[in-house]
Each structure stands twice: as C-alpha cells, then as structure tokens.
Length: 430
Image 1: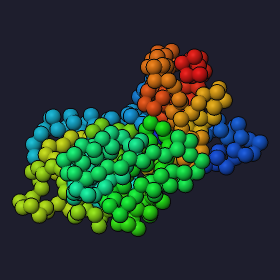
Image 2: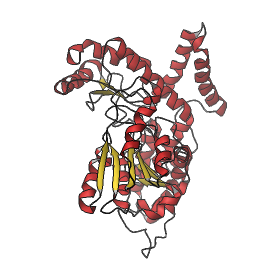
Image 3: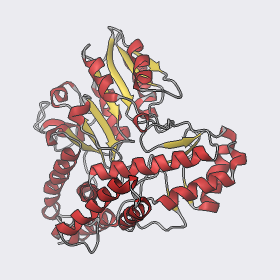
Image 4: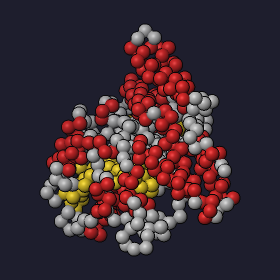
C-alpha cells in the first residue's frame, strides 16, 4: 500500500515535527509573535514568526530564483500533496483493477468530509468537480430560467461567470444586467449600492465573484446575499480567490451556491474543484452531465450535491490528494493562513505605495484579500511581467495591470524583492 494511504493521518506540512505538542508550539509561536508586535520586542518576535513560516515555505519545491506570486491563477502544491498524487497514480498504473480502485471511493468521501468542515458546509452539499469554471457552468446551465427573467452579474466576474451567462441568455432568452462598482470604494456600502439599484422584481439570479482577480476588490457577499434573499433571488458566488486564502463559512456567508478550484489558493491537486450548493437548492438545479454511476432512472440515486459530479472516469489520485491539501491547511490553521495572506498583502501594498505605485486594489483589508494589482498601461504590462521574472525571479501576472498574489509559501523577503523589482522598473508604470 502506498505511503500516502498508510499514513493518512500524518501531518506532512510540518516535517520532523512528530508530536501534537510541537504543532501547537509552532502555531502558538505565530500567535505569540503577533501579540508582541506592539512591544519593544517587536523585531525579535517578527523574526521568530518569520522563521516559523520558513518551515511552511520549505514544504514547497520551488527554487528561490523562481518565486511564484500568482496564487490567483495557479499555486504550487506542498510536497505531501504532490507525493500523494504521484504514489496513487503509480498504484493505479500498477494495478488498475476494480478491486484496487475500490478504495478510492472511501478516500473521496474522506476528502469531501474534510473540505466541507473547513468551509462550513455539510458533506452532502459539496460536489467535487474539476474546477471553478465547471462549477460556474453547472449553476449557469442548471437553473431553470426563461424569457423575461433577469440575471444580475458583476462586470469583474471571471468569464465563466460573466460571458457564460450571456451565451446562455442567447439560448434561453433571459436578460443579463451587468453592474459596475467604484474603482476605489471607500466602504462596503459603495459596493452594495450599485447591486441594490440593479435588482428588479424580475431578477432571479445574482451571480458574483467573492474577490476579483482583476482588481482585488472583495465584495461584501454576506450583506448582498441577505438583500437578494428578501426577494427570493438565487445568489451564486465564484470563490476562486477566497477558498484557501480566507476563512470561509458558507452557511454564514449565506450564498446558495459557491464555486472554487483546488489548484489556486488551496494549493491542492490540479483539475479538482468544489461546487457547494445549499441543501434546499440542490433539487432545483439540473446537472450538466449524466454518466455511469448516476443510477438506473432519471430520479438519481446519488446523495445531495454528488449528482453534479457524475462525469465518468475521474482522476482518483487527484481527488484523494484533495484530502491531503485539506490536512495541510489544517496543520497551519485556516485563521493563520488568512492572517499570513493579509500580512503579506498589506506589506506588499504598503511597499508599493511607498515607491509611488498606483494601486488598483484598495488598501483596506476589509475591501480586499490577497490579490494585489498595480496600475500599469496595457502596452507596458508584458515588458514588466518579463522583467520581473527574468531579473528578479518573481512570477506575477498581467491581469488587470501587474498582479502579485503572495501566499503562505512566500516570505517577507519575497515581497521586498517584488517591491524592489517594481521600483527598478518604474519607467514601465510611473
């Protein structure tokens, strides 16, 4: 039996730390450093905290000369997740019999249970799909909409939660209304009011993005859900930029459905994602695909949201490794993950502001998350993108400007290096 299956309860995220006491010491050290931040020992405490985060960084195989800082698109996986995928893929190749593969059904349910607990949902409300795009389209295609109905979207949605609605509207005849929010909101109400004005008695769906990948703006989704539900509107949320970056409690958030990908901030296996559907809404949404395993009749035998993952042959190794990614996050603690993401994003924004960069992303934590974008003329973005990678070893993105998204595998030195790189190439953005 592969090591990843034998040692399913081992905390891979903190190597050579065999005891629970040691794990508590690691996490407690971070909390203690935060508490000391305002004391005379601030510098020493910060150094100690950073040393502990170096333990996390060492779980990722990337080299210091090529530092990933684009979690909004793709994250590296920690060694434990990559090892699980490799070992279980090998196990299937060695013995692809039904007998050998039967155990993966149990592994898949274990992963579902872990993920559901971390996002504040029930296991039966979670479908393990392939990515956010597929999950968005399941909702897009699965809701019964007709001529005269309206769908309200944010113009900063990802194309799979934006253009996809327009394509569907051409087929079904409903109307899509797009909302624009202020580029530099001062408070959550600046983001709420444009949506409030767009809702009408004919609105059936409000389809949002939790945090924008092209501006970094974090929508007050909980408040928008409360407003929409007063009129019986289904609220769908694209959570690609929040699952794995922020603490997410879907029941508290109040949305009817939520989509996300494991390969982004969750640092999980590739081509695995989740679709959460509130239990009361599952029966009202049609599946995109019906494949073997669905059942013998149109009335599915599958339980809850599992009806959305009837897709035929899947990558069992990747689905199992989703559980390893959940354990990695649990070994740090989702609260500590969010705190670190916000700490590094704040450091980055402050450093960029200090050199005079014009930020697309709001400075306030309450209006943004981990995505940080510098305003760069479109014709200069590619040159800056290449220079940052070739000269400073920082892998960013040209989405919305020049985008940097530091995560738990990044260090404060990485963030400082990114700021130095932008300062060295100010002619491309100033």
